[in-house]
Image (cartoon, rainbow, N blue to C red; front, top):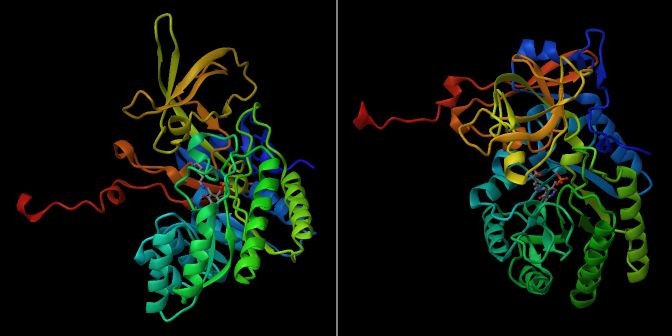
Length: 441
Ligand code: LLP
């Protein structure tokens, strides 16, 4: 069965009677007029469709816990949706913990991970009642033990390991290969276990964690990852008589940005994982562990689109045609950072003939601020609403104020209604942290 991560557009996308694109029952031109552009638009039905697919696909595996990797798109409204869907949260900074906590999220369904958590963040995580902390390295083991001791607590931990699995994704978003900044190398696990057993008595080791990368299209890497984790659990059991009962398999499922992308479905992912767990449990004579997965991109990526307004254009004599829009690398860093490609349409002219080759340029003072290079679109006129699909993950969450451009607003659409979930930043907010030292006054 096909799942929403295999679609380019939100599942409610249509062309309406006005001849405009509509998502979640809302006309995109009306949204652009009401809220201004650039505007992130999130389709609630698509988010809920994919979370339902995850639950359905894994329903035969009794011990599964889904956690949304908040780094893909973190706001308080998303915390509410994840809570309603029964998902936990995978959090990776004090700011994400604060957002979840102040949104009223049940902190007993959260995990804290990251390769350089600070003393203050670990302390705050414990104070907020985070359920588990995934420890990334030796430095953090010592630090966390101190923090736990000073709080008079025993903290449940996973060891994040680097399983040595290469997946074919962009180099910047591979994480499970051996030369990685994340996690314990397989050869360092024993030392970590011994330290926890003998010295770090405020830590309770409950399982292992791995995340092999992001925007993954292959099944085999997940099968293999589980094999590596089981082998380690078995080894730890035999050598130290420690029974690790929790396995966090990370996230990474890919989505379809353009027609060239062929991501597997959530059902394929679930089948592969379940088969590997069953096979390796039998092989090693172990009980099936409690499994955690933490998808980010596949939960919110397809649901989100970005609307821009077309502004100036430039035809280079005998060269490219550049069409500038009112956003760019500050609201979507992915094209300039990873050469990411997107599917683009003109929201007020979706049926127009795509017979012009154009490069969509951002508005920032940088030549590399190109959102889409050499794509075919109908001829664009100033004021047209340009729609970029699949910007829901790592768009807003990696946005910046480069050139002091304000951060964009986000709306959630559903059944013809739109609700603001992130207000557009104001000039006052932009400058609210600026301080002029007294001597300049
Ligand atoms: N778990 C861990 C430990 C992670 O580091 C990540 C993503 C995830 C889960 C979620 O992975 P996902 O399901 O979203 O693939 N900014 C990049 C992606 C960086 C991913 C970082 N870690 C991009 O825009 O492509």
